[in-house]
Length: 210
Image 1 (spheres, one colour):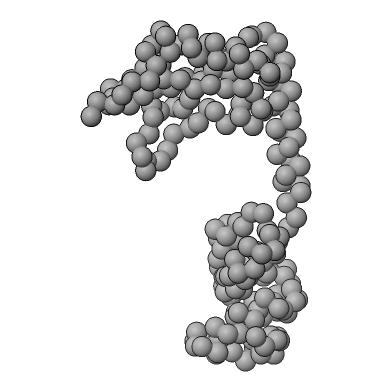
Image 2 (cartoon, helix red, strand yellow; image 1 turned 60 degrees about the horizontal axis):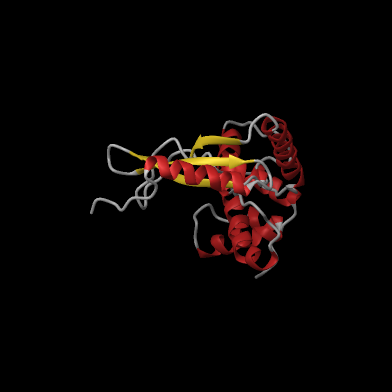
């Protein structure tokens, strides 16, 4: 793969021929200033530059594991917006339309903060109760391959609380309706005991009507 230069891009014809595609691939080796100039001069689009970098990330990241979350859809959306702004004559900066990655420690730190705050709130809440009885989802059990619904299991799983899910009813379509029993930390015996009681009252697992 040859080294790309700004002069090379400025000489590219607008038609996407083989040479053009090769040069777009080489954009990943260019500096941000070079890319900004080429995009600003409309010799290459922000979408093309972004797509070239996304392809490269997909090629090497399985080995490097440098990118934790690849925001491909949002990156392309921002690139299209940058190209549209440039077409209207609005170049916001010398690096307008140049894609970049950021360290995700800020986002991770924010998630950890909210996670820890939720856990502390849950500890205070559970001091008043031996267990929590909640739905498993806002829908009965889903058919294989279907999507949708909101799961109420994730928050307690992330907090590390013992949880048990048992069947407590049947929908009009014959699908099981589950409930979730959440106990205090280290009280799996309470969660299992309540689950046994719920099963005894509502019949527990039942074979499907087939």
